[in-house]
Image (tube, rainbow, N blue to C red; front, top):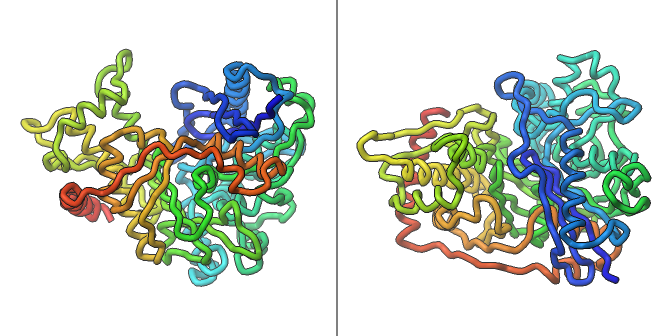
Length: 498
């Protein structure tokens, strides 16, 4: 009787689960909850929070649905892996209860705190030791709580990333990884340990840091009450966890220097692997420890992120027809495809989802430029929006190229914005690289990671024997020239805000 691996992807839009057959590496079933995007709490401009209990609620639904679809039971799951939205902050007390909603990845409240820390610690020190500015990352968010909610901070037993919280709910153990701590900018690269200097500067007791476990390792076992809730077997191993972007790269078998992965969900990301401690002097792109990093073979991922990606497309879908009868994405793509490249002079800046790192943490907001009431239609708006998202990624990709991270091939899962033919065309021609689409996603990647961490797969090659390419797309010389012209116009509009 075959065993399965369960992968969990804790996103800000939905919670996904995948069951992967441990014999073949192929997906047996997948599910997500909710069907529409999860709500974010925005108490003030630039804030974004979610209740960790909401993640758990939808996790229960996804896992049970997955088991039902596969026609199997939880006792056949050999190991569990977790992927999660990066840079979030979860705080729990000694009873493992959340003290406040999670401050999630697109929350901008800690930008000024990170900027002050960069100056106080010194840019040269921060970049050489953290490979990043403290910026708007988890450590700075924790400092915001210390400054603004001292009663909450006084009760903090441990801080965690979202995936650490889900693992705690499953196992009862509070642990994290070096990869996770690096994404929170708690990590000192030269010493390969938590940065004592950062903890001291922000006034954090080292006891707040969870125990560190390897990414690929048994990090705990499912406790009895969680097993009953989920329909799993008590003692099932949790054997992998990673932030969503390193995990997306892993799911695409992007593990070696020069290999590059991309996603375009709520946010858009290009993630390139290097064996160097590379950094951008302006911290517009960010370096984190990659999942396969080791002392013998260093591996980092350099990540560019555009917050306003799929969220712009979903906003247009909800607001351009009617709330009771919205467009679907297929119809939006059909209308957009009737419009020529460049949308006849209409350009869209897609930065309406918080401060953007590639813009040096400026909150530019989203905007439309060159709108002509006599020439432009909804199709123009839909096309200009997709092109604007691609051009924002191109802007960040040029920063990566300037750091010496050259790539001719980008791999992505066949999902989200990459389902749009127009988006794919714009992407390959604006970026200037071949795009390869694979039949995988974050939840499947987490499942395969669990197989490695639990020793079910002997190596990465065995884990990826079921990875299947769906299609590839190459740049076209004529179209590339048209997209370059449109990008130049787009960039001219952006410069007015910088």
